Image (cartoon, rainbow, N blue to C red):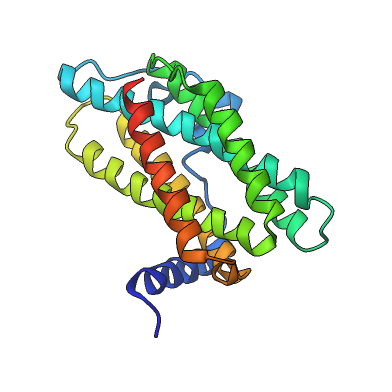
Length: 228
């Protein structure tokens, strides 16, 4: 019997597959389309929010940017080891390509909202690459288990951010767009999670232990990047 979390993932995957063939403009296109760089939603930042809310906004974007840096280097590390595998290599490359877009958009959001990046930027690169490479050396299933654990934490983290942003009442159009971008990226991350499960992440040796360690590490990194 599937756990509630697995059922939720399966439902989300079915919804995404149902809508994937329909043409639609993704929220992130506001940051990838050069013609839209001067729109109010992509060039401004809210001034009608409290200092506490601004701190929340800055902490959220600081963490998201650092998380996308780490994600890029995790997939880079995995691809360095498993890139020649005919099945796993293209799969990792596809997920990495999506993370590259995420990072590009987060970099633009950081600049737009004048957010100070975390000083742990270089640490995120090294730790991400090391985690990706080490789990890939443990085997394809372990690499997928790493992805499953990371994306589970990130998906939940994005959900928490959306709740915080829902409480941020502002007339500035940048916040509604930011929420839409976060929803898009959350769904992308959950799709990576689904992909990892479909490719036998739960067959990895010591899957429960590996998931616990990686997930706990991600949660610690999130709290550190919020503050530093």
